[in-house]
Image 1 (cartoon, rainbow, N blue to C red):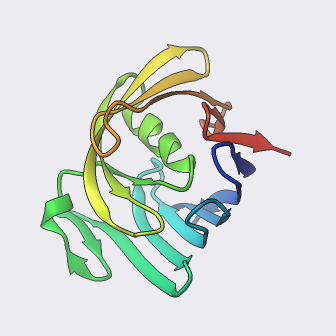
Image 2: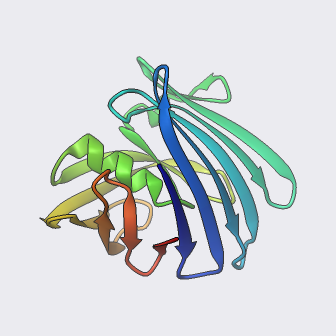
Length: 176
C-alpha cells in the first residue's frame, strides 16, 4: 500500500509505503516539512503481525543529521539502545509529523478508548508520554482527542478500508 499526504497547516508532503515482511509489516516513508521549522525526515517503522511497533528508525535533517532508534521490548521501550523506564507505560508511538501513527492507535484500540502514546516531537526529537482518546463517529470516521502534550486539541479523522488516514481535519489530506 502506498499513500501521499499533504500538510494543510504548513507546506509539507509525505510519501509513505507499507508492505508485509517476514515478521509483520514494514513501513517506509519520507517527509518534507517546509513550514516554520523546516526539516526532512525518513523513517522505517517495523510492525508485528498485529500492527504493533517493534522498532522505529528515524533519520532527521534539521539542519544537521540526527538519527534515533526506538525499540519495544518485553519490559518497555529503549531509545538508541538505552532502556527508558519513563516511557514504559506507553502503548504505541505517536510521531508528530505523520498521520500514520493514528492508524496504529486505532488498530490497537479496535474501537473507542484511550491509550498512552510515546510522543515524538519533531524536529526536536523530544520524547514524552502523552494520553490520547479516540471516539468512533460511525463508518470510517473517528474523533481524536489529545489529553496530554497538546491537551485540548481535537480533530476528525477519516480512514480507508485498511485503516490508513484519508483526511485528518486541518492537518493532513491524501493526494494522488
